[in-house]
Amino acid sequence: MKTADIIIVGGGVMGSSVAFHLRKIGFDGRIVVFEKDPLYEFSSTPRSAGGIRQLYTTPINIQLSRYSLQIYKQFPETMAIDGEPAEIHFRQNGYLFLATKEMLPSLKKQCSLQKQYGVPSQVLSSQELLDIIPELNINDLAGGLYCHEDGYLDPYSVMQGYKKNAQRLGVEYIYKEVETITTDESKVIGVRLVDGTVYHASIVINCAGAWGVYLSEKIGIPLPIHPLKRQIFQFDIATPLKKELPLTIDPTGVYFRHEGSKILSGFSEDTKPGIDFTVTRSLFYEQMWPILAHRIPNFEAVKVTAAWAGLYSFNTADHNAIIGKHPSLHGYYMALGFSGHGMQQAPGVGIGLAELIYYGKYKTIDLTPLRFERFAENDLVLEDAVV
Ligand SMILES: Cc1cc2nc3c(=O)[nH]c(=O)nc-3n(C[C@H](O)[C@H](O)[C@H](O)COP(=O)(O)OP(=O)(O)OC[C@H]3O[C@@H](n4cnc5c(N)ncnc54)[C@H](O)[C@@H]3O)c2cc1C
Image (tube, rainbow, N blue to C red; front, side, top):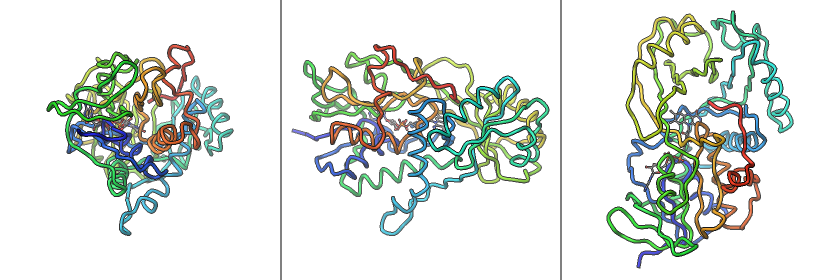
């Protein structure tokens, strides 16, 4: 009989972070991670923009990303294997929300909440924005919310860092697709793979990203989540900018940052839910480019060099993650629904879920606000700063 103590479905950044942290805090049973996409071609993690920010409007999101940022700063050294640093290219170039006159009062409120949690965010005047981006068109801007500690990193390298360290500590990765989680009355008993093989385990963690909602539905646990396509365009500019950009969010929602000498840009378009990886270049040329060219004149002459679509595991109820155990299906745990902010939460989620399983309670950060039960209890975590 094939058995494990813990099965994790999905070996992206979440599954790998949870697996690594379980081992790190001392869990020595058999952990098996099932991953259906050995090259991670369609996984959300490598398709992410990698933005890391503490600029949130809810205590739990501020705490999670503040914790994760400290971990990312040390990641190359703490996750090194045989002296080889786990480089994640974390560039602390800052994160900047640009604001119109109407938006500024709300950003000021957000700034004071962030400061209560130790985040060095600042509200900048429109003139001060020019110190950060000298080419910025500030005609229609009143200022911005900025945090110099934040920035962006390479999501694929983070995932590999967690995965390699989990494997080093004895976690097994099996590149097969889970067809369903198996249950017996009120408890999980394992998984059945698409090839028919059955594995037994008393704990199954659903870290299947945008596909996780379908697995949950199969065992009668619907979640307020759907997969949602998000596109990213990368382009060259004819005239380089004077300074390296922070990850900057235009008031329209179009965001941009440097990627080496290129610019990477994305936008949360209106689109139908579902698994869809089609790139529509018209999104860039018709909607994003005019906004980009208006904001920074150097973006008038561009050449698109790459474009891709990835999936948000989009929480339709409150845009936030669903983390923890299910209240009545014993042994069923989940870390899903991260929408557009999973990369900046992965270290905190990994340690939190590992603690909940190993010690029976959260120790590092109390993730209770993100529990499954909040929907039935009408205790949503309403986050205003969603990208
Ligand atoms: C375009 C885009 C931009 C983003 N930008 C940011 C950003 O700037 N900052 C930020 O913090 N976050 C961002 N995100 C969100 C972030 O990338 C995700 O929240 C995060 O990567 C989710 O990680 P995950 O491990 O849950 O999902 P994934 O990386 O998708 O991993 C889930 C894995 O489960 C596997 N799987 C699914 N079903 C099964 C099954 N039945 N059997 C076996 N394996 C299965 C999949 O193959 C996949 O590899 C962005 C996302 C996108 C798409």
